[in-house]
Length: 357
Image (cartoon, rainbow, N blue to C red; front, side, top):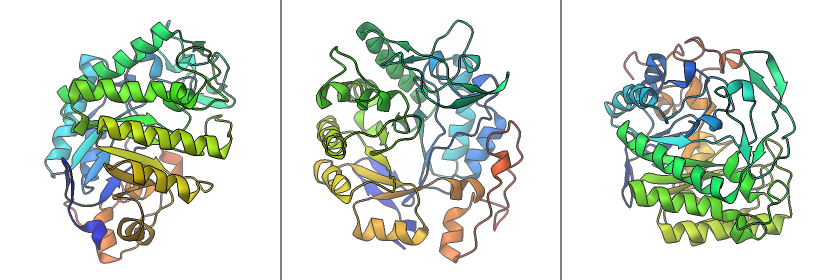
């Protein structure tokens, strides 16, 4: 299978075409990466490329409980355990920079820190907190243009911290209703300044961030994740043609920068023409994620528009997923009750075909 063969494009050199997708697991006590996280990623270093769980580049990005950060020395040192463990098995690992924006609750943030967003409109829905369980999302602070520049600078510093921690690159989380997508969506971003209004202005936050991070750590070490036509996390859908033009514009701008990859989380309502437009205008690697089986992933790679296939929950419950695909072995069932609990159960205790992964 092509899926299991080595992959090389530009400066991305992987032992297979399989990507472990980013998945929040809420094991980082006090937001510091720890030993069981290193074990978890080492087990799954059968993938050619691992994209870590969403990691906060700044304190106000910690919208969820127990998600890791990359803005303190302790966090950098904690992540070194993971990168060292993964590299032993000749896998590559990118750190996903996730700023949750208005998706979160202040009880999950350090004292005195506010949620921020392009808008001050509270997101619909609830967020789990370790203090009082599920609570309504907190109301965010709408940031100024000067604040936007600071957030971008903070992402650049976080990317440099990721390099210090031993990562092979970073992935900007521009999907799932978090901060970057909050800027992209005109039903959320109603700003009247240089970051709101037209497609070009709403895309400016993502493009400027990719540009500045590329300058700081190298464009070959930068990826970005998108979810066109997403309505998750209170992202009201907007005109399909406007969505199509938005991601066409982004593909063209990211091609100019020359980043390593675009990672697309597909949705059931994603039209093929948008995928084709991204492929026609972006010559780097394209990763496709969501709803893939080994068979459909193989077809996308050999006949479709994707270069690599990302698997989420399949990797979560099957650390040896490539071997299972090769042998045609049944996959382990997922333990959904232990997805976000703080210990190792349902995290590092899934059985493998061989003791040595």
